[in-house]
Length: 126
Image (cartoon, rainbow, N blue to C red; front, side):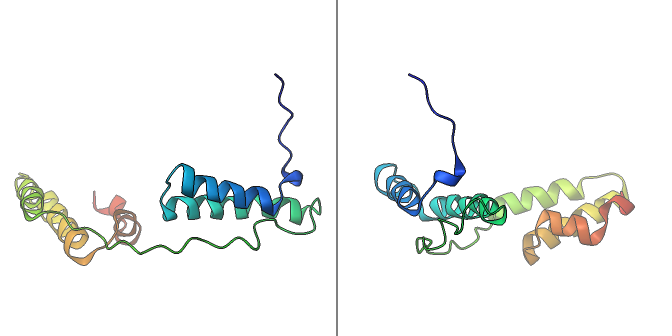
């Protein structure tokens, strides 16, 4: 059985709504998962519109599924204690202070690792 090649210009809103329903009802995918897929499809389907291969993005009228925001989870106290104990165990005072300060910033201020890396320019203090 041969399959015909995929042609993005043939995708219509009905196909995308069917995909969304299949993911939600048949596969039981979480709303956030389906919404990420829709976001990707919106970007992919914008290309043929920009190239004037399609007059309209078929994802335009397909709404995201409402979802409840998930609160960030914190580390258990035991894990926090273990991390700080490990940082404090370094023999090099400079590294010990750097590691402990970084962990405190990440754990208690909610700073993401990439944000800390970018803003603090850790490369310079290694």
